[in-house]
Amino acid sequence: MRAGILAASAVATGVAYRKLNHVSTTTVKTAAIQGLTQATNAPADSGFTVNEPETSFQDITHYNNFYEFSTDKQAVADASANFQTKGWQLTVGGLVNKPRVFDLDEILKIAPPEERIYRMRCVEAWSMVVPWAGYPLSKLLEVVEPMSNAKYVAFETLLDPTRMPGQRSDVLKWPYVEGLRLDEAMHPLAILASGLYGRALPPQDGAPIRMVIPWKYGFKGIKSIVKIKFLTEQPPTTWSEATRKEYGFYANVNPHVDHPRWSQATEQRIGESGRRPTLMFNGYEEQVGHLYAGMDLRANF
Ligand code: MTE
Image (cartoon, rainbow, N blue to C red; front, side):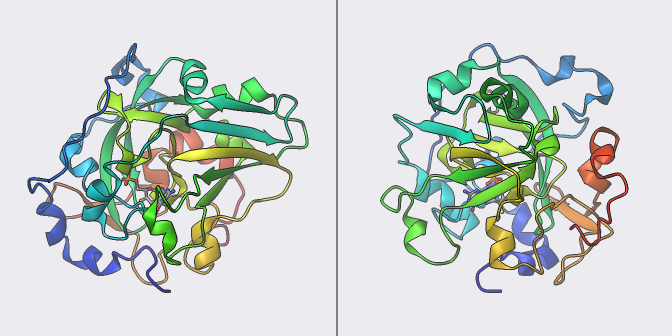
């Protein structure tokens, strides 16, 4: 493919990843999140926390995939530093009884923020552990009352090339779109995140709201969402549309199904030396395996 999720070359080296802790030119200033409950209080089998070191704030905020700003991971922080989210709205509609346009404040008040410490596995074979703040997407979906014929949920990122200069290039088709099956979207591990490390999301990580679906490759975690729509049919998704053979709709982390251009059996944890084995469903098989019972995961990659 063209630019694509490009870092396959870096996958082989691992070296670049250990050099991330350079002093950045951008200081990340975001507000503390009030009333955050700690994931450590969650039952051990919830998957809400992991017993692995958290990736540093510096690395999480300076090694980003956000093509609306830059295709250079280490340039996204600077390129997005002045991104304005004032007046942000989220439109939720399609097959729902109560379609609605929410202001950001209304979205954040739907449920209390919870800290969720999740593994994040990028399809490029690097990974992090991120302490997100957010609440289950199901809480928002319940507010709008999905109709019984709704089977899929589609998401859309802001389209505004004046605020997202990367959208002036045709590296991807804009706006960035993603989707989930409704049962995936309703799973308690799927969160609408509004923060990390106890603070509001920095622009480079998807301010003001993004999806985090920890058992799927990172590209399913759509950033800076302005629209959610309920549908009967599977919606198009950005990476799958760009390169259908390489990126599927499901994108469940699976060490047994390689990317056509590289192995998915192992990964480079940012900040670590050496590679780790990649876990089935990114280590969340106990929680989500039942969603895919009887499905051919090689065909539905
Ligand atoms: N969302 C939008 N709108 N645009 C993007 O380019 N990149 C995806 C995903 N969400 C992307 C996006 C990819 S490929 C990954 S791996 C994650 O965001 C990276 O999230 P992070 O930068 O917070 O680690």
